[in-house]
Length: 332
Image (cartoon, rainbow, N blue to C red; front, side, top):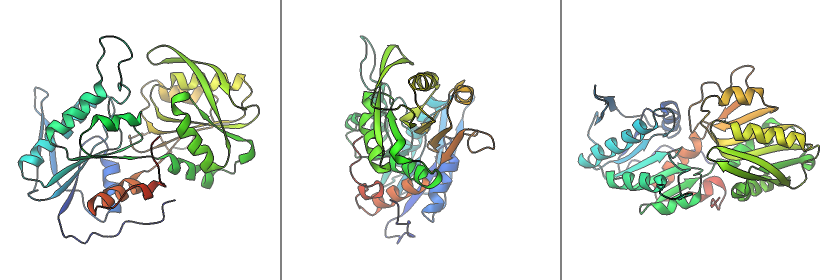
């Protein structure tokens, strides 16, 4: 799926890669893949909590790529880093600023589910544009419609096939007795793509949602009896709903259960819940840092999207389409 490695840049126009504090390890891996060095961006907080940013060298006329995952307990500070750094770059006459946001904050607030609620995903888009962002690169938005909240180009990538390659290369599954399970109807299209890529069947869990961050599996459309199940979602947050669904699937006759998601937020007490649940393995990417991943004895495995994001940056820089990186239509 990913055959072409990034080649060193033929620098006809300057490109500079910077990192916020949200995921510096991923930013470093991306820069290394591009055969570039991360440039100096000074970020700090004043005593009163205000965010400060300053570039350590001239960015006049440069194509600036700012890498920042917006997730974690300091999510609002990370968002402000992107906004303030973008403003600094534009005021320093950067040719363009591309915000590389592996995890897009507030993505679940993409519509009004009740009266007098905000559409915060749209608000974040407005803020980024107001700061001067010229393009956004992101991975597996909670809803693809968020792309429409922007008036600047959005390169929307998916880690779906990367997750699929992991299962192909690291597990000897009997694909005739394996099923990809969508956690709800909204994720069914992505689950179908993953099932087709793996060459197995799929099922859809039917849920009721009595309140925010709460859901209960009422039934399953498809055959899971005795089969290995791979539950695929875009993110894992507190894991309460996920672990409850796993228990319910087990009661319905599911065999071994594996879980994969692009974004491992793992808000407490997610790690303990996943440890206690009847799950064989939890697979996520490094769009969000997870220090519990890949340790001996843990269920949590993490793979990197650095190469894919690096390829996307390269394609944007040289004005080539990005769809070929991930195998075509990405409208999940």
